[in-house]
Amino acid sequence: MNTLMNTQEIISLTEQNVLHTYNRFPVVFEKGDGVTLTDTDGKEYLDFGAGIAVFALGYGNQYVKDAIKEQTDKLIHTSNLFYHRPLAEAAAKVIAASGMDKVFFTNSGTEAIEGAIKTARKYAWLKDGGADHEIIAMNQSFHGRSVGALSVTGNSHYQDPFRPLMGGVRFADFNDLESVKAQVNEKTCAIILETVQGEGGIYPADPEFLKGVKAICEEKDILLILDEIQCGMGRCGSMYAWQQYGTMPDIMTTAKALGCGIPVGAFVLNKKVAEASLVPGDHGTTYGGNPLACAAVSAVFDQFEELKIVEHVQKITPYLEKTLDRLVSSLDCLTARRGMGLMQGLVVTGRPVGGVVSACLKEGLVVLSAGSDVIRLVPPLVITEQDIDRMADILERVLSAE
Ligand SMILES: *Cc1c(COP(=O)(O)O)cnc(C)c1O
Image (tube, rainbow, N blue to C red; front, side, top):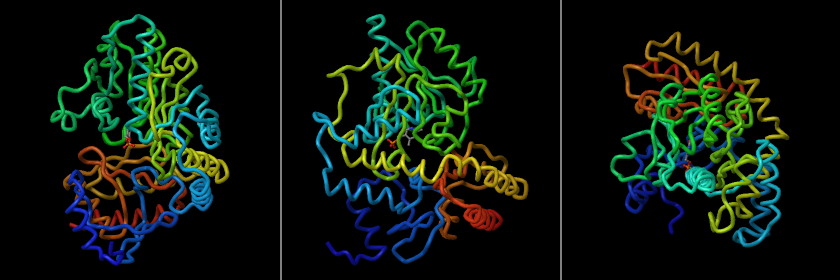
């Protein structure tokens, strides 16, 4: 195939052959370095999207690249019928970072959610043999696009064309403990929520809410599933956002930054659940946790430690918050800031957020949207104060223009 295709040819060839499920921006990225992306025309972009909260370490981290290259030369795949060194190492690092008990690696966040749902159902089934267990999920949540994950995603726009979905799901309002209590009954086997809602518009859980949900779960032996796919891996100022709340889940899902670009996710169980849920034959995956993916996970954890990523997020967050708060107070079209650590949202009024994202791109800044009216900032976790200043300059320019 012609490798000298120009930008427009790449776009046309893609649209000709790839199923149109995304309205892509007319930009073709070719390489990344640190917090900078470069497109096929040589234009540079400051990246505050990180491939949707994936590139925690920025682009081109040498240590991670070397680990992936080395593993590629050694052994990319074995299947889960055999042991391998990268799995042993990566699993130990996830367990050490979370303080939980057992991990199962998947290929995506969605599959981690599927595993969490199956685990919760198996746990409940072992207790009472029932086949009618229910899960409580949150309105405005996002957990993925497979039928199981979609069934616990509280967004009718995503759900409606695909009904009937998985049964036994009830929805409650995020940060409204009474609405959760109203959905609990003898059949409830799990409550699933994002510690910080991402796609829904960047809503951190209120500490009192999460504590209340945890108390309900403990009282009734209902499993708490915390989806840390977007908010985890250091993004909110701790390795996992729940660690700041002091609320360990029974099941955690993680993905996105876990492999910093290599497709990998995981669900992680506490001891109680690990000892009474999935056994051989219950769950499996051909690729999940293969040597290449696990080598990436392992290297990512090494770099988090080496570069003191979590400490850096804690140190730089006040500067980002202060900068964004200044924009909110000086620009009429911004009404609020919400978020935790380097997962921040700005609420836009009076103009469509999609237009703001497009205008930022033209000015060389990648930002994302969330919900219907939120500018979502999820930069690489290695950003500096200068990067934040540059982001704010561009955003201010874009939002000041009519
Ligand atoms: C992205 C995301 C998912 C889905 O992960 P995929 O890797 O896209 O399958 C699930 N939950 C949350 C909170 C997410 O942000």
